Image (cartoon, rainbow, N blue to C red; front, side, top):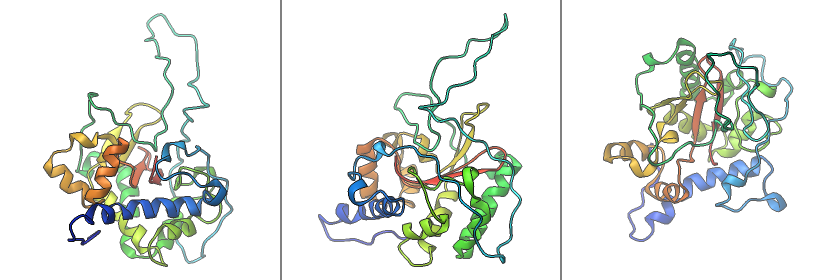
Length: 267
């Protein structure tokens, strides 16, 4: 999908920055973080981590309900700590480190990078199934098809870094540049067609995340990888994100048991 066709010298960077900022500000507005509660454009990391409020059942009777596996509720890095128990004689000491927020980029120059994967045959069957269901819904052009996949209440797919009140599909439509949500569906589809990473294997935070830029320092991308990145964002976005220190456009996380954990942007 073409993002910006700007050929006028000295204007490409400005135009290139338009897309992700517009979507981010739309998300802040939909989440009620505007006006007196508005955040500065570059203060994304100051967004409060708030669990989405429990929602009632909504949607049309014509929407097929897809049975989903039970989701994992991830600990909050600021409030929750791993359960402690008396170790046995041969037990390996557990490092006293906080659990990170799985929706936020985890990149650092010099650390061992995760393997970049493209083959969906390498993910568990529940992950393949959920990935396929989301892709099918996005390709349909009907945002209502996402409703049974997102779910509701505390187990719903996380769509905002802040609190989310109201209907989740209305929130997604608010983010989209059109009135029916096709742009946000296109972004979701593009994200899921990118390469992915398998993070935190064997821990409660284990996750398959699209796109892989989520876990790779942007400065380390080679020419081929930058081409892949520019299918999602513009060159102007790329420069902004390098200055910020991480990829902060949309990403999708699916747990090993097939729960769609998040679809968010920002940091």
